[in-house]
Length: 420
Image (tube, rainbow, N blue to C red; front, side):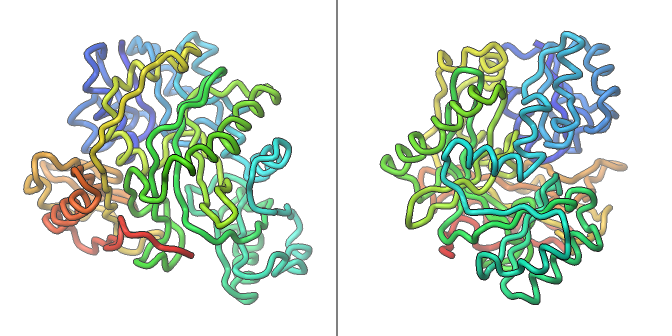
């Protein structure tokens, strides 16, 4: 099968790396790809949001399956456009993509199907929202309704911080039209965990668990990012918790999709808060999480292409999916200034010095004149496997220290548990 991956980040590199191991794979392409993906796939000069260009490339390259990585092309209807041309795609259609494209859409879905989540209210008027500041007390959770590259959530510790955030989101429009509607949520106390699930019309199958670290600084301090690291499996999961998640979240979600006519095919990312009352849903995403994918796919033993094909043919329930008992830890190396503005074009050294069994997934890089340069906020993801969590963590950080670029920043507490 000829496959084209859409996207150019660490998630797409991990997907490309895993697909390249399939004996059934013909040619592998990635649009637009990056310097690391170029080692396993042919990169095409087509942007991930160029719907017409992607459809044309899929036809020209005789693609049998398109795998959509990022959320924006899903919300823009890329899967619908490909299907209209008779091209099979792995990823939800635009109707289902509202689960990530609109926080309010998802909160209404969760409430309608009695799936545990935080209390919430929606606001479209800045004055009304300012008058409701502290609605659920503090910290106050403010979420831009639309897509904001994983950065549209503000957790305000005080009234002053909340009013400043409201002014930036609705007045200054720092997230553009994504902030036209703001969802205010009750602050949940507990530990965050991530669950990726393969989903078709008939089944929802969880992958191995993972824990993500959203804040930029150690100790879960500073602004939210797209994710500074992950590990898998989560140290917090046991059989009892998994059964609760299946019964209270996964099964009601699948029933809800069926009842609401949401013909979901692809990956559902479920962000969870493990509270004293039990697991609650923080968010739904429509695709592989980043950087959760880097830790999770490193432990997948089954053929990923077989799984993708089974999902698109609604026979996921019959597909065997096997996982390694090894542990994985992923550390993100980010540019100076991220998640705000950051420089580009800084040379990366030490990539050839890492251990042969450590995976380096490129997130924001480009090749130029025989050198690898930074080109994004999150630059590289260092993923290590070990027989124990501690072994994987030690190996990841030992190899991080061999890589250098000016202004490189990373969290040193990835793999440790923080309770909030």
